[in-house]
Image 1: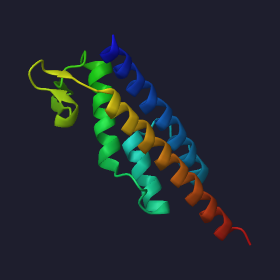
Image 2 (image 1 turned 30 degrees about the vertical axis):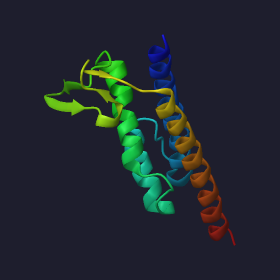
Image 3 (image 1 turned 90 degrees about the vertical axis):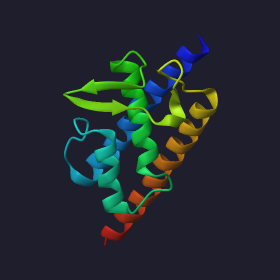
Image 4 (image 1 turned 30 degrees about the horizontal axis):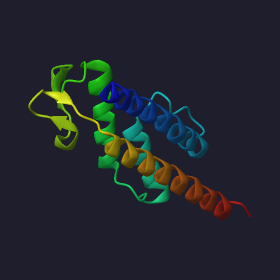
Length: 133
């Protein structure tokens, strides 16, 4: 049950993170960003604001975990559109072949997500202040 709860929590976290990052992208582009993936939106924000405190690779790994849980029944390897996908070893139980997203992983993911969102919010305010006469 704990593993299932952690899995559902990371799915929810990545969904909310994508929501907030999309809002920031929409603020600076005046275009809908919900159809763009989280990683693409993060890259766009980094282009406009500079690199946030957490690497995009960290969030890319979370997206892969989320995709494994939602689309691959928590398997650590699967194929999508003839392309092999694989969860980062830090979130994989090689023995069972399943995602193992622990409470420690979840705490880190929450902390990094909050840190990144606050950083973008602050830096977008700075950009806006520079553009206002």
